[in-house]
Image 1 (cartoon, rainbow, N blue to C red):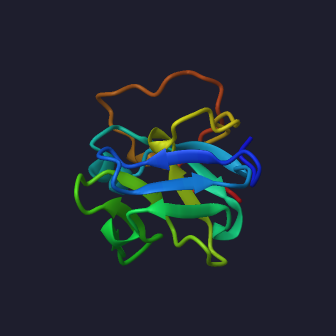
Image 2: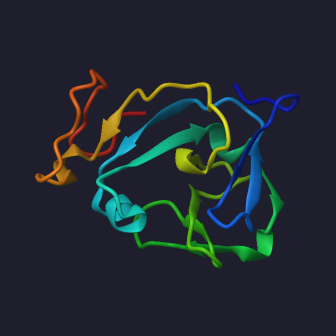
Amino acid sequence: MPSPDAPLRGSCACGAVQFQVTTAFVSAGYCHCTRCQRRAGTPWSFNGVLPDGHGLEILAGASDVTVWRPENGLPKAFCSICGGHVWAGEPGTDGGVGVRFGTLHDDPGIEPSWRQWISSAQPWFPIPQDGVPRYPETRPT
């Protein structure tokens, strides 16, 4: 589990944006929404949620972080150099932050516990029968 004494490092694909997670994730799961599909280029994204946006510290490349603010939903942060998606939400605020698990350099210390937006899942790619609870839209919090 990440902590201030044992931070978990992460970065974008090119390494320009580097960050660390210094608190444990409160949940983790898969999002099958169309927005995540289009952003990630995959049938779903795998994310960990930090409590109230705290516990994520940018170590390098803050000026390379670009944020897209969709009309509905959390702001989406990515590297302006390589396009790598790093998190959703606004670190340091009272809102939640979802870290893209593909950006992490080591084990986040948490297993997936939900699949949300199953109603948007691609019919050509079956969702694994993994026993993880499924929600047609946003998971309950």
